[in-house]
Length: 408
Image 1: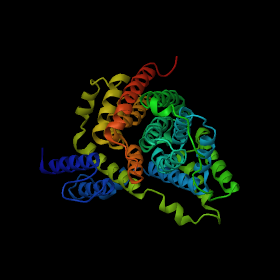
Image 2 (image 1 turned 45 degrees about the vertical axis):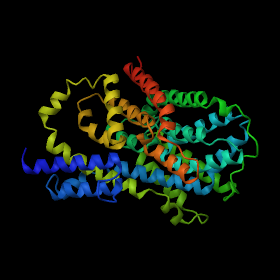
Image 3 (image 1 turned 90 degrees about the vertical axis):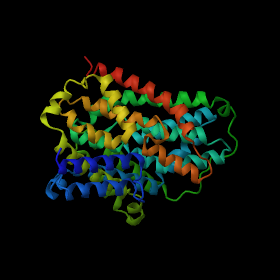
Image 4 (image 1 turned 135 degrees about the vertical axis):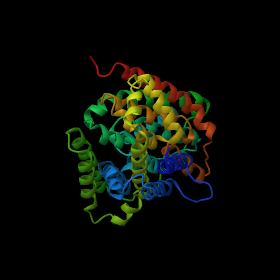
């Protein structure tokens, strides 16, 4: 190995390791900063030229993520999530019904909107509802995090890694959803069943109090406009309109209002996530160019990745080692050797693997941080006792499902 390849290898490992652990020793960098520094180092050490680095960034995936985050922000500001949560809470006459409602609402929203953004909105609402009803918030917060991962597996727009997969595979939105929706539905049922079983004693008590979550901040017309626009975007996805184009069009349409200042929308867009994506695209491209020779790619054909069970295990393991987005980017070169529909297995496994532990996905960490700040902390064990069996069972169902895909 020459000195340049050695430098590329060190930068690649440091970047992926830093993203996996969330920090680098002796620095205060977060994941976005680590990815940016890693991408810059790849260009400086000659892993890629500046033009090659720019070309390696998937602008379609970034545009889709940006558009969906803006739509979620505008739905939140319009009061849509508040209205939906209050509607579900007022019709839940038992804690089991409330749990089912939270799983269903979070899972449905996460299926079409970015699950991380949904958690940012839903977790505070769940806390307000449970406090108003004088309930233990823990099972409902767990339901929010785990259901967002399970529901997010259903479509290309459900989470960031699926957006990358959608852009790389060019699988139509409708076909993607048809393949993954049954797996997501089973995963959501497992989340509900396991939380209901683990917390069955707490959930037997009837709610007391009124499920109010604060005064309304927007009138019905604004909420309806935001909901119809978001629905139109989803319909456009299924009709075959390019996902980035539909998402940006919907976000732009919602910005055309006097009722909401655009600065409020901008503040809710996670620029750090976009930056991390761009950096990881560059780092992954440099690593692929330096080390994935034609000989290595030929050898990969003998690893059995065409088998849904093996690909599920590899993807889930890698996702828990380095996080799901880096895992998908690392697998991308090998997927070129497999049938296009193998990407569906990667989407399923990389998403559902996020429920394994507290550290498995950004959605889990978002909910845990909101819970900690509100005085209702969730421990690593709280996630593991429900998330581990939910993950194993849902991955097994997914692997079996795709073992026979496509139908007939």
